[in-house]
Length: 72
Image (tube, rainbow, N blue to C red; front, side, top):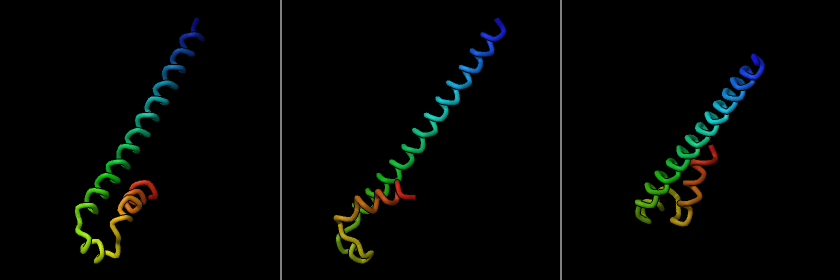
């Protein structure tokens, strides 16, 4: 019977570890999405003249926001 209780504890700790891993992955994904949305919003708010001063074109905003968030 002691073996069964040890197996249950082991299973519970494995599930807890798996859940924690999933939770950390979700937090990382949400953080990257937040960076993407913030970068996209800030660049979209700039005028075409301001973007040109930075050497950017409006069509590049999505790519730049993606790179800022996902290609660290």
